[in-house]
Image (cartoon, rainbow, N blue to C red; front, top):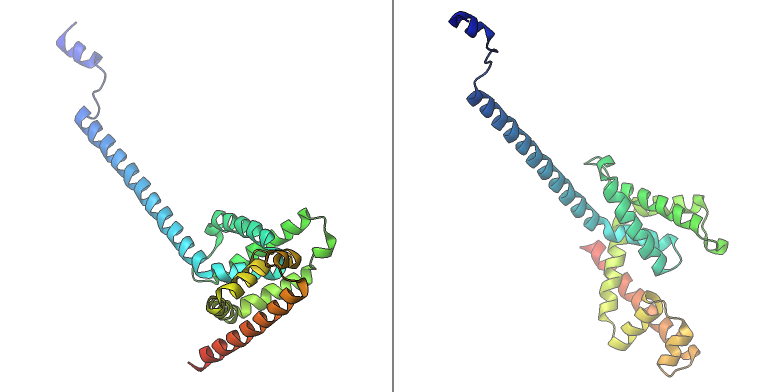
Length: 214
């Protein structure tokens, strides 16, 4: 075979291997840069969600407390609301009302919770649920100030009064059990609780008035 024939019989060399390697490196670098950009975007989105949720956590909890019968139910539905709002956060449009969107998610979780319950007497009508939801969202700043004032007033109570309120309302311990633990009658404990509630009511009213005047 002549040299020309040998040359013609060789497959075309195409692009030099060094160029192939360079192109491969460029592709890998572009893929890595794209992955890094996606990760940064996910982290930014996660930070945005965390910031917004923490900012409106109190409103969401207050909304759930207005619709559910016990703190255990509130805790359960609140956790479900956390999961769903995070899972569906891509549907939230930045710049719109996060509290309204989150409360809508919470409302749907309340409805799902109600369907799981067999205690009809504890259920609220859909119309009432929607009304409370709208009221809370429209006046959320008022509710936030009220809850903040209430927390501050509870902290100002004497230790035994604060423990009494927390046992009865936050921990939902029955009145009779609270009375037995304190070696008092149920009637005595009820009167004490009523007096503490009056004190809290006056304290909150004063703080809310001072807040409006400043």
